[in-house]
Image (cartoon, rainbow, N blue to C red; front, top):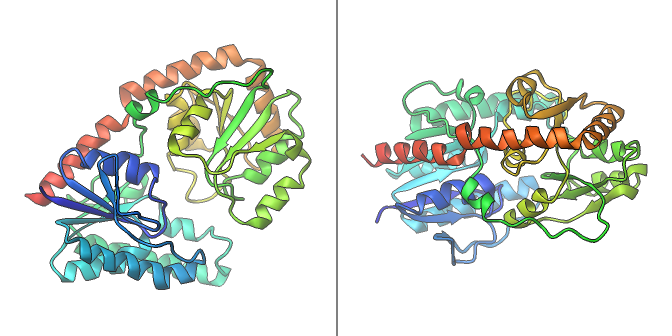
Length: 366
């Protein structure tokens, strides 16, 4: 059986796109191994997690020690195709190509545009780093066997028959087998957000808005904090009294909690990489028939307008007002959410994207 090796130095092994969608799908036809930190050498739903220790959490240290560790393990796997998921692994992909390996680059985000908004990067360096990443991607597109952007917007950088758009649409079969969390006695309506708890994803504004929400609803947060400073800022906010932090949830626990919530939030701050994004979380809310509120970006309003409610992402007051509106009109919003689920079934499920993934691999294998 042909062997496929997925590589990541940034994402965790249970990343939704990498593991639950691509790797599990490919395991139907190929031997699949996933190389990333904390791999235990065991099979997980048909996918082997290659044995690999944890990396340093510091970004520079991760690139100095983590990236070489991933590439060394990649060579040990002796796979037929290597599928990389992080821009920092592109030079490692070049080395694999030098040894005659087939390599795929999966583009999860518009990285050059994303870098321009990274606050932790010294501003005078952002344009230079973005230009270097853009050039590195262009070289990789020429060298690699295929490039897999997640949206049409990102695909504009990669023109040609080696470009395969594989959207991050939800796997309904995995979502539908998860039962809703059993609600507690006297439980208040839940406003739910799961994902990176960071400034750019609006967690501070979201917590601040809870102080202005007139409903007795609670905000439940799940995911990793950007840093201790962001967590402290949220915990010291007046809205924190109406919040509950759930920690990092597994995919199934996150879906079970989502199914028991009243509203799902997709709160992205205005940023070049966000305006044309198609957030996976929005599709998961739709798959669970969960009413949702989203940042008011023109593309999002056009794409999700029939199924969501929108607010000014720079205003905690506007967010609070929108949350109150949805809660006070919940029956009508729930009807829209049921229609959203049907829309996903008909047009936006992973089952269709899986076919594109298989087509690409079949062509690479010849």
